[in-house]
Length: 382
Image (cartoon, rainbow, N blue to C red; front, side, top):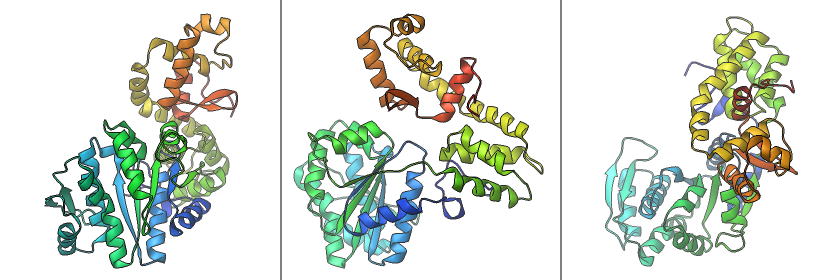
């Protein structure tokens, strides 16, 4: 791809910025057999962080093997066990022949069908004809431990958007089963990461749930401006263009250092620049950024109840006391129970998050779009 800024893909190599402390911290926990629950909002770069860290670990220790599972694609218990077994076989075997041998050796309770794929990283796909019986589930979950022990490996299983599993109809049963088996593993440990903070915390920090204190919880922060600015300026320079430190900093401030949006806005500004970026170009492309993402925001807010949209308006207008009589009447927020319920819904759907005594918007460009929709200046702080 002939462009200096990347979004919509995992950031790799020269596009992977900083995260040195987080990479070292993640490696330290996993290399010592400690399970990690990694939490951050969407598009902050946690998937890129995990992938880069796993690549470093496999380069530093030839006994480390990594299996990746994307829980976002899992819609049933059967899907999960198929994905789990397929990821283990693909992550641990070196060729198709070995994969076939291991399927026969380590899965006795089931008679899987095997699909060969052209993707070299996911060469086979298993259909386990899974029946929801404890024996078959236990055998599948024990498979990486048995292979690792037999071959003297350290296996790390990475499950992206792990909180999606909690939406499965059989999650309560699965949750206990997974914890029961996984906590006994000596050669395998887990990196479970997700973007729904409230759901991840409920799974791992709620003492009434099986995964309580399953391992170390890590929160990743935004990449700081000091790392973004030279990256943006280098991206322009590599293509014979220039952008000042001041404007590179402005790009970061406009989108609150949000990884996805820094890359996206930088790309728009770079595309619109012939030789040297100007403030006018940056501000024009900010409008382009909002317009580009507006259909998503419109769709998301259309599904909200009128009182929930009213609450978003009250927050964007700067209201701090949502239960105040004047605020309730001005925006039509409803009664106390409605206000309490709507706060919970907006937090669960990642529109807002608690910050001190108040609330802040999770998505900085959604906040800009909402400001524009309500006739407010886009960036009063800058």
